[in-house]
Length: 372
Ligand code: SF4
Image (cartoon, rainbow, N blue to C red; front, side, top):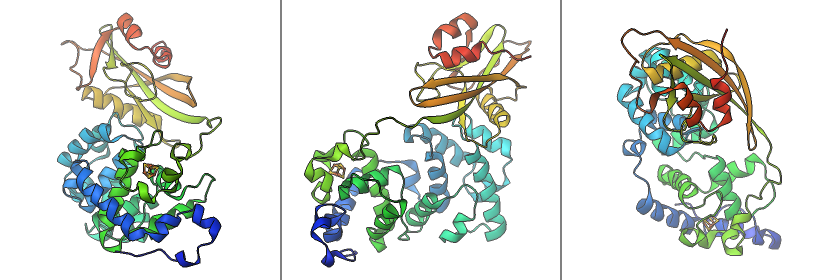
């Protein structure tokens, strides 16, 4: 394992008080404490069973913008249907989107398929094992490349996301903004070269289970002895609360599919920031993403058949700091043999009942948006 970090002997008095002094002085002990804790407390997640580059890649893309609990059934279905690169490279776009239905940000799914085809074509199916090759693939940025290289190939490559940034800020006891490179440097420096895979997973796990955004569990933390914010009792002040949170634009597609006087609803709220238990089928989309194909994938996932949708209009809505712009797509199904059976998690509900069940005015506005 790596010993102390460079520059520790030249530590100035001011730096001793904050900025990673404890970590620099005791890197080996820190690595051991974190790895010991991870070996005992790691969650049993399916992508950890066989961490091949392909599986790590699929799980990392799924986990962008999606919580672990939500991602789990999608991961299982995806790996069952596309167990390896070649099967994904051969798939059609609608097949991949169908498995992604309901998760939103469909560009992720399209990029997976494109990248799989490029790997098969350019690298003859061998998963790239260098950062340069990985970054040239669609949908793979610095974080995802680092995760694949470290977790699957055990290369000492760093990962930095919101969790890692928060963890480093607290361990260093820093309350002021730092450059992005500051975090990448620390995330590079603390990796034990021979245990990068376990170590980076342990860092992610600590951020997800113990060093929580609000209410960090310092009393249960395996590295509290190395943490300047924990020792000084200021962990819950890092990062500092924003006085006024910057507003965030969110693009959604919503579908209002009707049949025989009934409306298709999700029996579980599809968007975690929208209040209420029930909702319309909805998915978030990226800034440059086309709305119509996303709506089509959503309806196809809900009904397991293609539906002809028409764009009905746009609904604007605000929830806390989110400014939502939802494009609404309608369809009225004509069926002779009763209501089509929806996928699990969806149900047909009478129109008046639907208005009562969806408590958010975002959905109510969408229900009243008519095409033509
Ligand atoms: Fe996070 Fe507290 Fe552990 Fe520091 S001691 S790393 S603030 S949980």
